[in-house]
Image 1 (cartoon, each protein chain N blue to C red):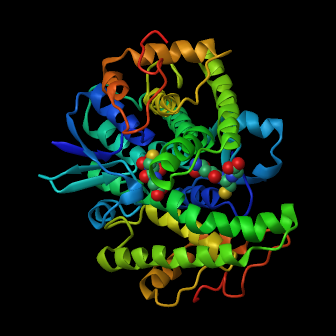
Image 2 (spheres, rainbow over the protein chains, first blue to last red):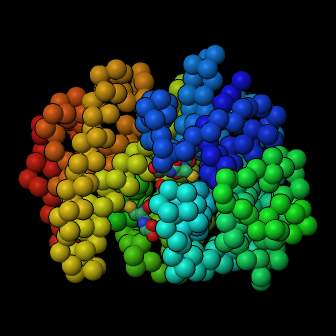
Amino acid sequence: MWRIYQFPLCPFSRKVRLLLSEKGVGYELWRADPWNADDEFWAMNPAGRTPVLHDPDKKVSLSDSRAICEYFEETVDKAPMINGTAANRAEIRRLVALFDENFFGDVTMPLLHERMKKRLILRQPPDSRVLREAMKLAHGHLDYIDWLVDTRPWLAGPQMSLADLALAAQISVADYLGGIDWDGHEQARSWYAVFKSRPSFGPLLSERMEVIQPPSHYALLDD
Amino acid sequence: MWRIYQFPLCPFSRKVRLLLSEKGVGYELWRADPWNADDEFWAMNPAGRTPVLHDPDKKVSLSDSRAICEYFEETVDKAPMINGTAANRAEIRRLVALFDENFFGDVTMPLLHERMKKRLILRQPPDSRVLREAMKLAHGHLDYIDWLVDTRPWLAGPQMSLADLALAAQISVADYLGGIDWDGHEQARSWYAVFKSRPSFGPLLSERMEVIQPPSHYALLDD
Ligand SMILES: N[C@@H](CCC(=O)N[C@@H](CS)C(=O)NCC(=O)O)C(=O)O
Ligand SMILES: N[C@@H](CCC(=O)N[C@@H](CS)C(=O)NCC(=O)O)C(=O)O
């Protein structure tokens, strides 16, 4: 059985978990904190990052969440998530990169730094200026999501795709950390509400990171 | 004909150019500086980043260099660069991510910031502490490349792949900016020397970024 090395608030691990659940691939969760990574973890992934997928029987380790997703897309037929023409697939991958890099860099990463790392590791209070800036940038991203939801059935086109999973993973972490304000983003909110009620999402919503509590609406399916 | 919007020292644009040349796909270079991006550029790529590929006849825009490379891999048979079994392909993509994200973040990006952005845009002197740290981290990356070159014919396995193109693109920019010291890295140096003499590499080595000059060894094929 595949093991996923991750911590509860890693958005890239969440994206992989959503993909595996949609595809019906079983996995075990193994806790790994990149800020405490030991030699064994570095040997599995020389980038020193989560997620890492490891199959102890086959002695295979996979890392980089996009490489992992492409691997399961190529090896498991069920629930294709990078589908369609080459142009459709380029659009899916463009959006995955936008969410993994820009949304993460602008929103999720500063929230993780201020509200998780400072609390658990650095023992410092969060910087409210950084939090405000992240929430301001989140609004810009949500404007673009509103527009995508207005123009297409799913974010990248006619079918649910890895782009939807990638954004849902980022938003779920940002929302856990109190960084998402849906005000003025009805389209994005309704897209996320549909997503939250999928069976693949349940395990993410019930998981908690020690010490850090999500806001009360976080796991509610109608909010 | 495809247009590539880029600036001469963008490593992600260089990776795409190497791929297109190896595959024999023609393109025109169009200059775009992300730090001066206009509305037209943001419309082509909502991430506001280079490279963007645009075909004015087909009215198609592609962005994110990995999505672009997958697109040409899927549509052009010549010179496959993401090849082999699903596990081989995962290894290629893992290394591309390592070079695009970790090597770029540790080495190329700080060099671009200190030696290009500060010179051209901010009009500040470079911070020598940041430059020293980038060069120290470069040694760590080159140690890992030495090990890969010792264990495999090409970085990701038996064939040249997108992993080789991705690293060569990053190293060429870091070397232009004086950030690569090959001392103690004979394996990595010999791998790069082979690469530099490929026809696809010539156009990169002869291009110059205004104001900023590369060191004298930069375009020499035996150094
Ligand atoms: N490209 C990687 C990014 C993974 C990543 O940045 N993971 C974070 C945790 S959310 C991490 O391990 N950061 C530690 C570090 O960068 O040193 C992926 O998609 O898997
Ligand atoms: N994931 C993107 C990254 C591209 C990237 O970071 N490009 C840099 C230039 S080398 C850029 O446009 N930076 C401007 C910015 O991030 O705002 C890709 O692979 O194309």
